[in-house]
Image (cartoon, rainbow, N blue to C red; front, side, top):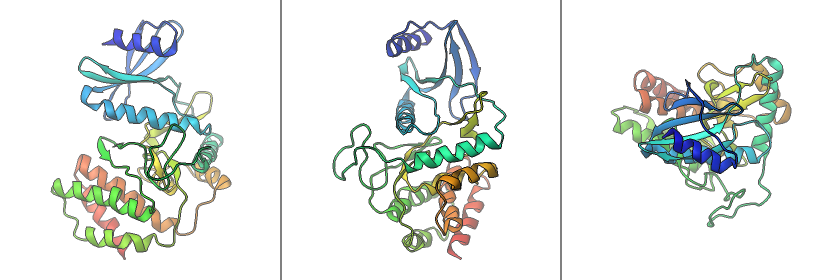
Length: 303
């Protein structure tokens, strides 16, 4: 398997690469991660079952689209595919673990805002397949991807409230009920979402989609980096909302973001609706107390 991966790296980079050192590193809670290197270069490789190749294809596409914005640093995708019983993706190696003081986090906020403001040079048109660097009108993405290991539906939708109700909250509630979850006011919430978002008309932004603290870091040189995206074109506030979930980002990040693109009024209420998506997903992945937390959030949104 590793010989096949090394051969694919050589073909993609046009530079001969043979793995001389391989060590296990964190690949998140879903994948196995490895640092693979020869005497001059190191790459980051992630492995999963061969059936999960679509997940890596989507990750590569998301990273490449984020790279194309020429804003915030993300690891460059090198190659991906299957080898034996495994799916793999090989990424640029970034030396993470910098201390990440206020300056780095402010820069992360500024650069994320710049990514959110990015518009492809060729505008997309609804009803036609997007080419590279092009997007359709509205909200969605070229393909479906995953949030964690849960499928994430990205069907192009012109109306943001409809997209969020149908492909985010509605889809997670459906999965939650199949898992045995009880969400008594779930249908009330879905009915209310158009009203809750009726005065909010966001422009479609390329969003990371899973921007919690575990998917952001600072290099040893002090450069901010984000990775492991669940990308799509959506309301930029979904990323900012998630930076306040699961421990949250430092205040310096928010200062930097608002310096470039201040948030719209009403964000403090909308962020609960946006973070509900991730709490429902955590129930579907892990169960436990996330069900009661989701119901508390639903009640808060509807109050």
